[in-house]
Image 1 (cartoon, helix red, strand yellow):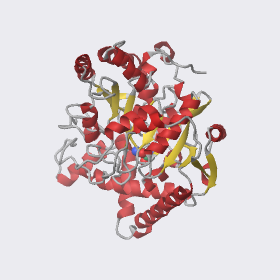
Image 2 (tube, helix red, strand yellow):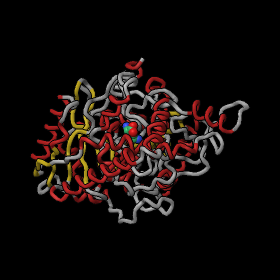
Image 3 (cartoon, helix red, strand yellow):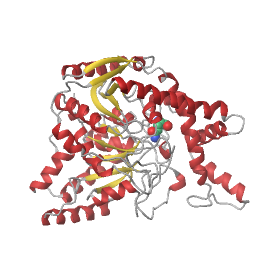
Image 4 (tube, helix red, strand yellow):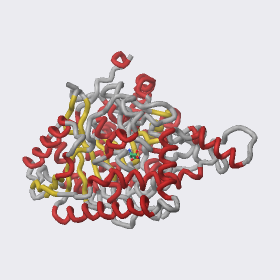
Length: 499
Ligand code: GLN
């Protein structure tokens, strides 16, 4: 069984900040050690699609200078981290795992990267992901798959698999991913880290390359809920550049956890009947049930609840997300920017050749599905119907939250699967998302935290909360982590083990 770490690369963000504050380590030392780890391990793991070595070292030296002057910008100042390659970063290549954007160097930072830079974050690099965030295994990247640090023959989940794997592998203290149908929570589950999807509208999407605009949300991968609170505090809030980001107060998440007592007394936790159906791996069910018992021992009141439209969520998601994607991806035609296929031809031929070469199979599949669902004659039967189902699912959750404060269940129906196991069967791949897509359809926040192992691979526990109530989610996750040590396990990643 994996051990409890004391090595620096597996320290939490909070512990790392304390080391920096006490002068035991400098940001430059931390950054060099993370970069060394990446160069030793990443040939095998494929976690990064761009390593920002010079930029990171420069940012680290600037941070050390600030700290020596007593002007650190935030608790994140000087701490190495990474960003999923769909978040645009000024002067740092951003590819979305696609040949279309192979050479795209954005001229400015998106809002989240900008806020992190202003907080003093040190960007180690951009993490690999499924092309345009479409997938559940990070096998759809044009740059090859990322591998699971717990066992490199297995997927890290997706689409933000590189970000989840970076945190699990001790390459930086945290990473930002995006969650359209589960892409923060599911890879967090498969890699044994904490992954938070905030409420839709909590975090600005400005500078996030769009997949499905009504579902996309940026969220952190961390080692603990407390660390997630630190990152959320920096990235949350209304942004005039994103009209879907909401003007609601941003609580002090870190302080809210500091004030939380170690008990869950009085907290009403809903356990949905529909979350234990076919396809759920027995070991996952068993460990998640055991975790729910721990919540009860910590004082939570368990309630049996029903979310009656759960069985329609995947079907609705796999119409709405591709429909929005087909519209968002229309711009990659070789005319406006990005890749253009070589050749003579007229503009239509050029666009066809560009899109044929530039996109991978899964992205093409989504564009076709989405275009079909939106076309005259099919719109009513598919897209409109899916939107009606979406309304019913949102209502299931708002009804449930009249009775309970949080909902708990598995994050993913299985532990990580082998690389290649599901690539020929898109439907089997889509089934991974059965427990995560409802939160995106309803716009509510969710968090996944580790709660056990099966065959040496991590299992994730998911909490879902009311709109804009990330505080309760983080609190329940924090209290669980204060009573257990699943989140402290780390993979045994020695270079000699990998080769
Ligand atoms: N796995 C889901 C999909 O393929 C979710 C992806 C995501 O959240 N970006 O669409």
